[in-house]
Length: 78
Image (tube, rainbow, N blue to C red; front, top):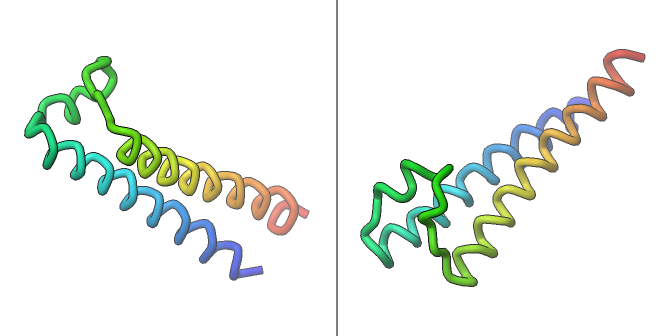
């Protein structure tokens, strides 16, 4: 079941890269780097494309966390 570790690491890494890509698209379009730094404030006005790319990245990162939980619950802890 070592392939689950690779799936987990790959999905978290790829997801993080995709989220950074969505922020890069936003910065290229607006030039507002400070809005990305203060992401907890409601300043990001993403286009539909940037939003979809961002959610795909976040979804991949969540998938990686779920795979990690499944791996540690059923295969290492058993």
